[in-house]
Amino acid sequence: MNIQRFFKTGLVFSFILLFSACSLTGDSSPAPDSNQKANDVNTNQQNNTVNELIVNNSDTIDLSNKGLDTFPKDILSKTKTRKLILSNNNLTSLPSQIGELASLEELYLDNNQLTGALPGEIRKMTKLRILDLHNNKMTGVPAEIGQLQYLEILNLANNQLTGLPYEMGNLQNLKTLNISGNSYSESDLNIIKEKLPKGVNIIQ
Image 1 (cartoon, helix red, strand yellow):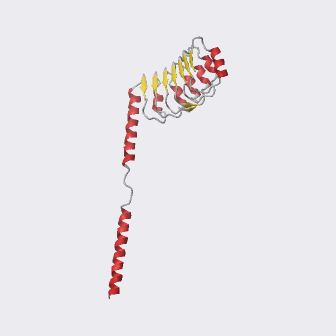
Image 2 (cartoon, rainbow, N blue to C red; image 1 turned 90 degrees about the horizontal axis):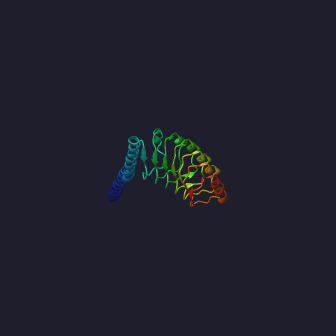
Image 3 (cartoon, rainbow, N blue to C red; image 1 turned 60 degrees about the vertical axis):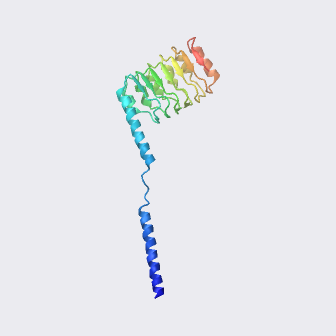
């Protein structure tokens, strides 16, 4: 009798343990990540802010310090924009369609993560007077930059440039060229200097 009671007690105890384990398993699904939800909300708010700035502005669009890692293509519809500021973001490249911003006079892309070289379509931005690209990771400059006949200020400081296109010598309205903090060839620079107008301020 005691043996039967012992086995009955053991079975009941085992059943209780099994039931508890199942209950725990059923409740073990991960709770929603509050941090992820907060990040999603912040991202949506940021996107809405960027879109509002693009929609509500035409002459000047300032999207600096917005944490952007891709170029907002809605900007491309703003073909009458004259000043575009994308400083202090995380952009790594630019779309080839950037040439559609043919009315742009000032373009600020400093303090990003741009690599490689600008797309050759930049040649279409013939009204550009200021092009600021300092503090990026660019390794080259497209030859097409020499077609920007109205360019007055070109800032390429603190990139990873190892060469300069001779076409930069075609920039006959250039007033300031900053190429400090790069590893360009002095021979390239000397050839460019010969073609540039006298009085250009070259910062090495």
